[in-house]
Figure 1 (tube, protein in one colour):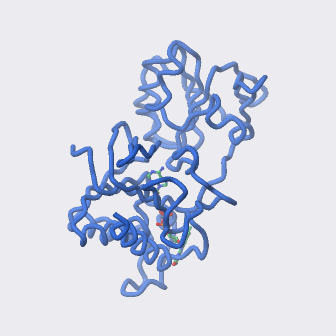
Figure 2: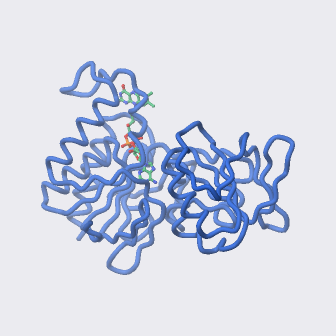
Length: 282
Ligand SMILES: Cc1cc2nc3c(=O)[nH]c(=O)nc-3n(C[C@H](O)[C@H](O)[C@H](O)COP(=O)(O)OP(=O)(O)OC[C@H]3O[C@@H](n4cnc5c(N)ncnc54)[C@H](O)[C@@H]3O)c2cc1C
């Protein structure tokens, strides 16, 4: 698979799709990464988007993706885990692949809140969202994997090949039959991540405190400032200027992730504008 693109987009919702189509019209190579179908997948019926009356959110997104495919966008149904601007390019870890691009666009939708007590405080300090990026720090150690979806199974298997002991907690129900035999599937959910002297030491599950050296949290959406260290996020929104630039070099953002109103038409408009600014800026 090609590993360098003019633009990599994180997010396959209306903002990401609109940006991808605009960039293809300007002859840019585009990788569109998405972890799921985004906010729209739960919309039973959308009635306010021009030209597509009485359509379900899921059908709308599938139509958008087909249009992208026809336009020559490379669709990659995997989450972006980490990105790092490096001079003239941005390095992007998505799924289990390393890519590079000239510019990056974040269209990751409404920023989800960190859900587990302790998660906010220790993210990046014993809590990781990227198995491929941080797995080697836990060679031979005991780790908890908290996974909300099926893609977490593959990442947990990778971690299981490195760590001394791997415990698997399903944060939401999903198919996990393909977990390797050396991974222990736990009953119950992690209700808190505990620490001593600034270091993660245990996960709380029911009444039990289970000792661990580290925790990997695998969800379809990674908090943007964990995905992009140093990214400016305020009140859960990625901060952008009038040209949709974030504070990180070569990294732009658009759609719900930069703020309200949370509407398809606004997301589509911003994706288009961000793409044009990106093309004009380089
Ligand atoms: C139930 C419901 C009903 C709605 N109904 C309407 C309606 O009728 N009309 C209307 O105008 N608006 C509606 N909305 C709002 C609308 O869905 C959003 O405003 C719009 O989808 C925002 O588009 P977006 O591209 O910014 O984000 P989203 O559509 O949320 O897309 C975000 C994308 O980012 C991806 N993603 C997240 N993290 C990562 C990562 N780390 N790596 C790769 N990809 C990632 C997701 O998988 C997804 O593809 C509704 C929302 C909901 C929840």
